[in-house]
Length: 387
Image (cartoon, rainbow, N blue to C red; front, top):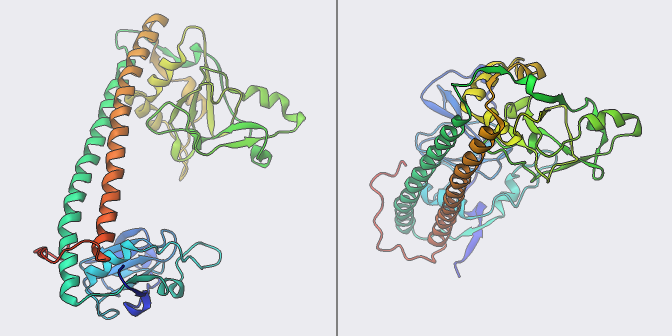
């Protein structure tokens, strides 16, 4: 078992400084907060290389800055003035311990420095061994990172394949018509129902229940609404039926599409979601795929209005000009698209599991190396320490 000491025996952490956006002057040094690099500045407050530790927001996050930089007040920094340990070794040690556990700040969750100082870390071995361990981890984690980056790029290719598959919903040989002519209902949820949200009642379908790249409902986080009897008419109007198509119309999820299935039947839509009810001439599944297709998404996003909050109006959806083939063609196309998308999602799921395993291996490798469970005595230091 590797012996440990409190973090304060290995390093000190200095507070970052306030630096408002309008006070920054673009320069050679990165500006770093708990979320990583957010710009540049002409001055720095820590030397090269340095470590930045998240204090607020993404507290406990660890960032390596080979050039030094300017740590802002949401973070701490460590450089050669604050530790006698090899900085690169310390960078890996900080990734191997739990800095999110000792959140002691009141109000906004954060990493209190005094609590962090009590976190047990491996007792530093001789400096040469620290460097050897860091060199070994530089080489091994770089290999894993390259593989993960390659897999992420392949995931982007899968997203491109999905867009290409969805493009099949557009039939250029069919005359376009106004979508509203083929809908029995176009509505959104009632305003002011936020006060009725609670732990009981009907499911409240919000924009948070939409996926960017799937027409399935996203039900990891579900809210419920219990409106008073006086809101019965609004409740009936905004109730989801099977086959309805739900579209985000405000905020970051604008344009995201869901096909209502049995999981959400009977739920009420919020004011941030548009409910489209197809007529008997239109397949809901086909319509959901059509609205998710690149051409329609470009059209929808191009018709957004509003300042900092993106938004679609109900007329934006009613007035869409789309080709409506016969119902049998719609159903055939939708079934084929569904078949191909399931194959894509299965491949994406397998890739996500592989990425998770690689991330676990990376973390386990770091922990084993810095705690002495892995013999790296024969490993050579990486030629470039500024990774």
